[in-house]
Image 1 (cartoon, rainbow, N blue to C red):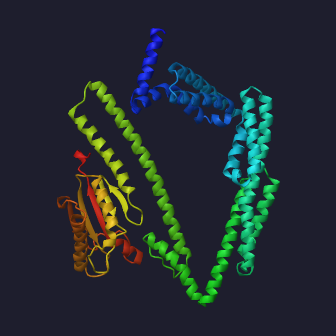
Image 2: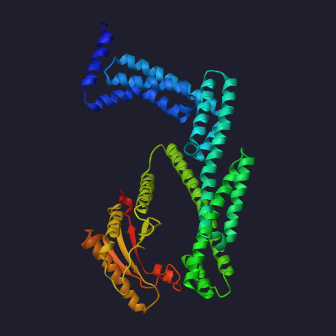
Length: 486
């Protein structure tokens, strides 16, 4: 045996006797190139588009895995892995070609998959997949004409499978709903909506049968028919309930005005319905459109800010090159920027801790504001009830995201009641939350302060019940120590 082969054998035996971590490192080294090639092939969808070549590579790869597990010759494993890597590269290249050559059938396959054809049309899906696999294999072998012929077959079958799946999911379900509606006297109670569902169903089926290569419209019609059938059943049930309750027309109108009043209150507006619903709706639409414009502007401002930050970073790099060193001022600036970046990450962590029913988290500069919407007090009381412990435990965890931060508990009330009484009540409630954090959850007292603002800082309209509820609140302000942020 040569000295080289002896050395290889010795190193291999040492590796086998080494701890598991060492064997893992050996495997990572041996398989690195083949594993990268495998990932690239999979990223190119080679399993589907170049099945023969990909399978050849995968068999070699798994063979190397088996040889490694059985302690086979290391040179043999390297050789097998090299074979696998070459096959994966070939499969990737073949898949990229197939992605162009078979693009039409690939799209049709995706449409059928989105329609859940594998579940609702399994026989057609299997037949189509076999034709697609044959097309891909013929393309791999250079039989372009044969590949296109089988691809055409697969495309037709996938479209049939998609059509069958759409009918099974939408039309069959809608027919069942309409049958249920007939049993429940829906055609008599909600005739317009019921007939609309029937008409949409007939139109969807006609479009599916006549335009089998364009399923977007019939799919949409089928979905609308399904919705209208369910809507008709709901309306019929509602009409029967209203009849049984023997309510007056005024009662009905008032009950259907209430949701509009609730929506207006959520927008911090008062719904004035003495001139009908149209002015209220117009006001809400204008409000929502204004919010959308503000959101679009905020996104643009954020993009501009990111661009400016990039430009400033580039200027810093240029200054470094020109000055040939790093000044203390620049070091301090960089450290502060890094601390602010950490605070942004920590803010995101806190934001994800709470559900919308528990708290609303916002940020002003480097201050984090946690509005405890899930914490309420009984009227005129300042006792923190035990059921709020889980929420306050989350608050403690949020504060601990910034271990050296200062915490301020702010109490607020609505405008009902006397000014002095509201101010005193808000202070007592803030003190109660502060004491709970200190006494029950062991938050150090030196980190916490509390203050009451009474009714002086409203965040919503006190003319509505919903607005007053939002004004009665506990806000928790977390102020990180920026210079020493971890």
